[in-house]
Picture (tube, rainbow, N blue to C red):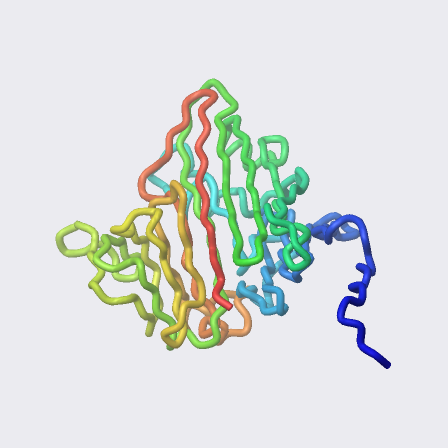
Length: 328
């Protein structure tokens, strides 16, 4: 058979629209998932608007989720990305939030799914055609709260939480609005549990020469914040620290494993970074932490606005978020 040099190219087998991001809502309406045409995926539990899975195109899970995590709405999820609002930890000395449970009510309230939107590459070609990212929006207002939560925090508010899945990473952003006539204050944090292979080989850069509060050691002898050394942060015991990175939110915080970059985090209007790992003893004492040696395969690096309080007057809005880039 003679090979013709100008033979026609094969026709596309599926002419028409480029591939679209796929959205799925579970049968019991408890979770929402999205998959890009290239294979990246994210899954969000409506209880807490908690991200419980984020996978790359090869199906590799990027987040750590406890095998004993409660996903039925009976308690906040251990793992993934729980959302902290309107208080970080507990604040018995802050009258407005003194009656709230640890980390507030956002992570233990059922959110509404507001819908999805997609974006496409500006240069459509055979390799890039289709959705480059998908954004999932979730909402929370007093109408979603239990009577107990409304009584403990009786303010009018509106939250919109957006989770955007892209080919290279994941973006989470929060819009907070005061819908009432009375001013109120809040704190917020994105409590991200990153999955690693071996915590002993993990280091974190971007926190060098930065002030921090240490919840394990307690206040320093002078009462002033500690200052981190100029070296990367590594872990060999329980860590619970609140850093204010010297480089500001726009400076990336990098999680490395074995010296290689695994995740990069850039923050917007989130001035603090919490680093947490319970280590052996605390992991043993948590009923929803499994396996018990799971602390070896996770590290929490959490973008937040938790030092002091954000104040909103009537009608005012605050917005903050993070962009997480994952290395291949």
